[in-house]
Length: 145
Length: 110
Image (cartoon, rainbow over all chains, first blue to last red; front, side, top):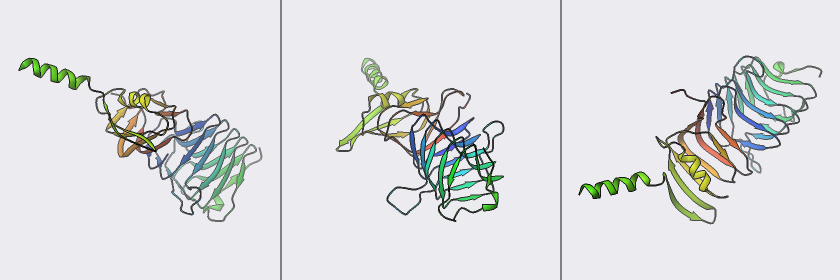
């Protein structure tokens, strides 16, 4: 998906599930209950075109709904995989990125600011931070699964 | 004269909501305007084949399932919202689907 504005969804702005794969480039995903969910073996790539150095950032902002799975910018769970989560602006969500329940994410070069928690891992969530460009290191939180 | 007018009007009303624009090696391009035409976009997607592009204008209130390898292009101005609050706006059930240039919003009660 490219250059879309996705807002005001009563649940997730974008849901990718069941071994599907989705590329998200240059979208604004704002003011949903939660922003993006990858579940049940889904794959996602956010913000970077393959074979080019230029990021095409998504803005994932102000997804701050309440209740179970509310207020999450990017949720990666159930053996789902974010092969690249790079170059995006993830702002003002309750939690910027959640990687849990055997989810995996490679996160680099994002602006992750103004979230109550920047990146949260739990329950065998696997997180690779290959570069140091993700700001807000103090807001990362990891708890045993 | 009145009969001609009635005939002309019936042809206009019966015309399909989409126009077939062009075809090339990369597939065909359809154009569709959604305003006040319920289900117009879904009907065009039904006609499309793998590799086709559907260019959309206007405000669409439809619940879409895309099960073909197509490009859906809203041109940065088209908007799409589902028909009920329990629906996803778009469900994609195919590889190599591109969706660009849309405002995707939740159900709007009327």
